[in-house]
Image (cartoon, rainbow, N blue to C red):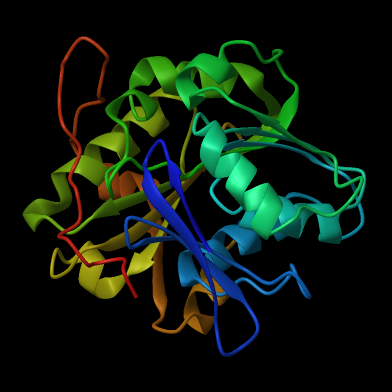
Length: 268
């Protein structure tokens, strides 16, 4: 199944294990298990699932804002593990959302509200102190939009988060020195608080492109070390301050580009 969407050509294909994968122009966007939404196949998604499990006990509703929708994998996870949760998804590609709804239907009464706006535009309309978790997992052609990693955007995230709320970024990097994710780490620390970094060792050493998950809060972030060791390949867990080092925060006024993974990096 395929359809033209704003971002290119979207396809949904069945996998041998019974899951479905969503791609846009060949790049993997999501893996969805309709029979068991608690099955999170991508390792970085599993790590974010671990973070969600620290926010509140199972079955206790939480409030989550997802910047980036794709197949709604994490929104489905929250809906099943914490029924009656309030979730808002900010996804500007309305054609993609319609395609996903048709091919990978959301559960009835899931409490997932999708708004056809960008993360930057949509987050300004949300109430102060209204959210337990904000997850930024948005890409345009395998690069994170620059306006989702600046001090101004982080300030909006901090505004809508409750005092114990968590801000979660899924980023990609693999450049020597990891200049991009270091500066995002510095931006998050300056605008919200400290936290942790979850990533494969090779990525942290600048030896290959991959996902880097940043988790931050105004309060101490619960321990995540055990979940990182369970990952395959194992994810390193280190303090956000160690990654940030002496890097300077990013701002809207600066004007910058974010690293794009080499073609085919996320095609399999």
